[in-house]
Length: 330
Image 1 (cartoon, helix red, strand yellow):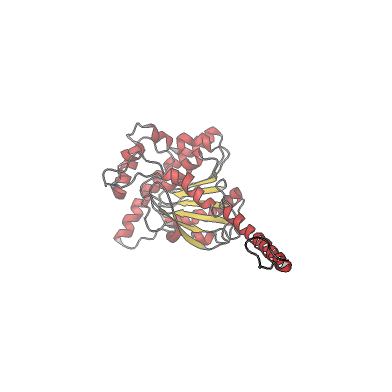
Image 2 (cartoon, rainbow, N blue to C red; image 1 turned 90 degrees about the vertical axis):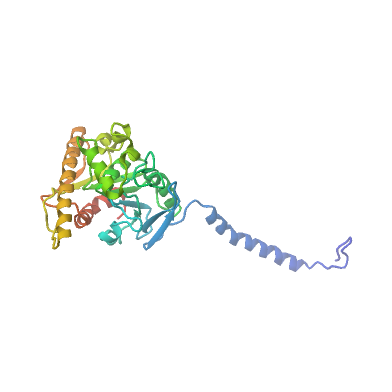
C-alpha cells in the first residue's frame, strides 16, 4: 500500500508502526515516576551521615551542621549555642559528643552556626556599637526559613525539639512558647529563665557588650520596651503548658569537671562559678513560676557544677530519653 498525495512512493510498514507505538508507550511509562518525584515537595530523609548545609535567610546564607536520623526518621533536634557562638562551627559539634550521643537514634540533629550574643531572637536593628552589617532575625530563621528548607529533605517541621545552653537555653524556652506548632520538646541547660528580674537587664547588657560590643538596645529596645517581656521565659511560661520540658542548672560550686591548672583556667572557672550561680537563681524562679501555674517540667538541680561544656554534654545525655520519647524518635 502506498501513501497518496505529494509524498507518494513512501511505503508504510504496519509492523514498524506498531513497534514505534510500543516503544513510545514504554518511554512514557518509564518517564512518569521521574516526573512525579521531581514534582514532589520533599524527599526521604538521608539515613545517617553528616552534612553542612547553607540555608538561605534574610540574614544571608546561614551554615547549618546536620547529622541525619539514623533510620530516615522525620523528627529533628535543634541544638542552640551560647553567647559567644562562633561563625565557623556550632560548639555542640566539637565541645561535646552530642552527635555521637544521637548517632544511632532516629532523629536529625540540627546545629545552626553563628548568632553571637543574639539570644536567637529577632532584633529591631543592627548593633551600632560594633557596626554590625545585618539585623539579626534568628527567630524567623529557626521557626520559618530553616524548617522550610529542611522539609525538602523530609524533616517534619511539626516534630522538633530544641535544646540550648546559657543564652541558647533562654532562647529554647522562648521559641517553644511562641511556636507550639513546631516544637514538642524544649530544654534549657544553665539558661537564664527570668531575664526581666531586677538586675538582669543590666547583666545581659554588660555580657553582650563584653562578647563583641553588641548593643542590647538594638536587640529588644530600651529596658522598658515590651520586647524584653516577650523574650522572658518567666513571662511566657503559661504558653509552655503541655510541652515536654527539661531544665537544669548547677550551683556554681566547682565539681568533677573543674580542674584548672593555669591562670587562664582559674579565671575561666571563677567566671563560670558566677554565671552558673546566676543561672541557678533565675532557673529556681522559673521553677516556682511553673509550679504556681501547674505546668509540669523535669527540673535537675545539681550540688556542684560551673558554667562549662562538660556539664552540658553530660546533661544532654541525661535528657536524651525524654527527648526521644517526646519526638517518638527511638
